[in-house]
Length: 377
Image (cartoon, rainbow, N blue to C red; front, side):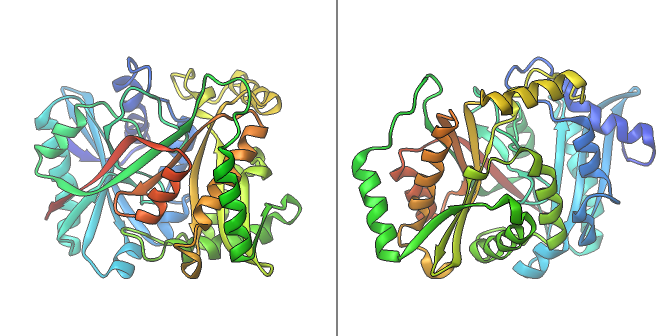
């Protein structure tokens, strides 16, 4: 067995291709589009590399690829948290402890001379991207931009000397079997209206005619809302602009809500239809004309019944006053108007009581757990 850094075009192709073979028999794994993965890994196109760096490794045995990993330096993380944490991500491996150990050792050997004392992951590339190892909830497919892995990854990681750093809770609410909107309990709706009145806040959807100005608001709100969270790394202007342009064609304006006090934004929520419903059957992850047609048809006909709430934030001075519940309620009711009767909220840090309470009050329950791991270097 050999573990070598990715240096050539064929190496990168093999790095991208591995999970399509490893998870081909898992009906719940949703293949990402290969072109999206290639762009994510591209040091010239991904804005992450303006403040970070990474090395990609392939493990081979007798000429066959049996594992992969990335060692990641996130300079913004270290500046904000004043620590010496390096990261690993893009971990994929056959069920072989020797292969996993060799991959983790290669990533450690690359990070250690750069002054890090801890390796954390998985994070591909940061907590703003796919992160966490699925440790509970393997029986349902992931929503868009969420990880999924086989159960045997957990012992591979833990037997390699990693220990839990933090759990990330993933919530679900609603019912996919519904064919009509089931209103939120009247008592909760009244409570939301009372909270809005007491805080003096109003809600509005994103204005797509002022898209770039609205994205500037999102930048400010995002970085203010999450700045004290464990592991938080602010997204740079370029990173947010890059993400916004990718999602602009498929945004449902009703599902992006701003909360304002006297015309000043104090919170926002973002929900996106779960396009994995369409991607799941595309087992080789290739962008074909047929896939584009299916996706456009699903958007036009509003046949996607699932959504994910990846972002919901409240500025510090409005926390603990129920604004998170107000925003969840707005997402829930607006999504239902588009025929979306099931939603995923999260992830949420296990020790974030305000966010977890807000989700619980809306009737959401934990159905998956992602785990971040640390290993001393």
